[in-house]
Length: 124
Image 1 (cartoon, rainbow, N blue to C red):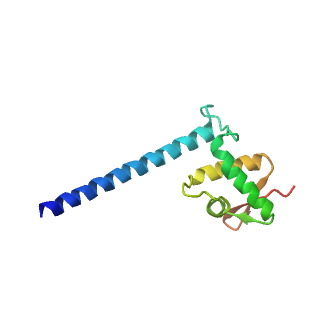
Image 2: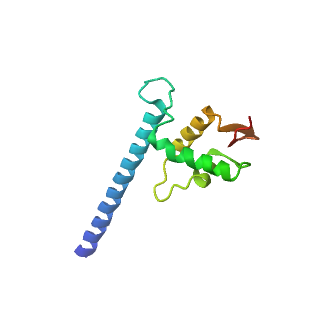
Image 3: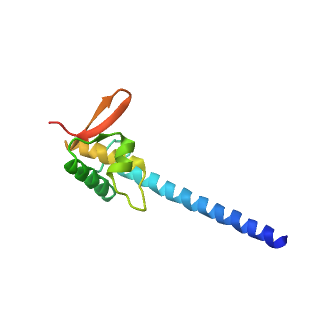
């Protein structure tokens, strides 16, 4: 019985460790999102579109639109299907900032369809 209780305690400790690690990863992602989005400008809404964290999603979005110029999707769809994250998927806020950067460069545009905001290649 003592061995069983010991194993259950080990499982509880392992679960707590995994929760702490997950919380740490989430906090890191949120901090990086804040740094990218707000930069070092304090309250100014300055987005550093050259930040290394944005290069990959911006490139993936651009490549998707080159392969399929008629593509349009929601933020969630772009995040899940246009960007090949691999094993380490970034926060959806990174995708949102990447889309805003591409919008400011004239690469993409957003439009409203019913109650949804969709992103597509800019229609100059």
